[in-house]
Length: 180
Image 1 (cartoon, rainbow, N blue to C red):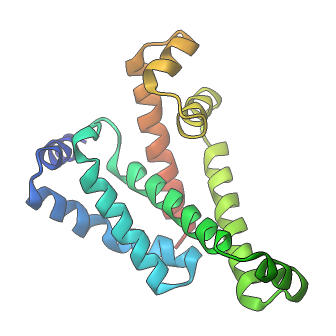
Image 2 (spheres, one colour):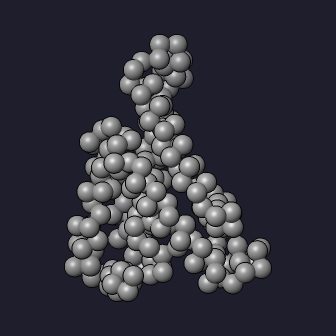
Image 3 (cartoon, rainbow, N blue to C red):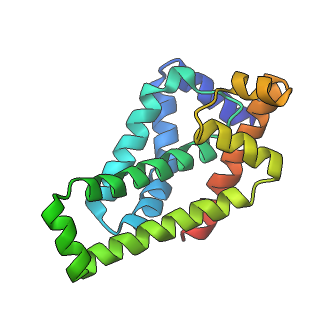
């Protein structure tokens, strides 16, 4: 854990070597995780690019107490969902009607994959202990900050951050275990 904290500190300080080490460590896992659901090498490569671009852009705000594995896989999950939503939101009304009436194999496959991904995510979140799940959902689904959650639950901000770090780690591990 200390080595990862040092790596995150270096990354926050814009150290390109630290970024390269993170990239080398996670790029294949993120790619295979993405392609296992997206079934498109191009879409999976775009998710990988977006994950690492976002990591670099957010490097200054990285919390060294949040496990990088969980953080990256949670981000990957969100970007994969966005890719599914974008594919379906670009449809014109006539195309949507045609899809509903013809149920082409590709669209049905995409919908099944989306449902599988959503189910996997729901199962991962369900594995969290009740309090940790509540904190995670307040943070990720409701948009509350750690401070707001701490005030709401009468807990310290540090306790909330610890719960979030453990939730990220659990979700990342769950995704890795269930996608290979």
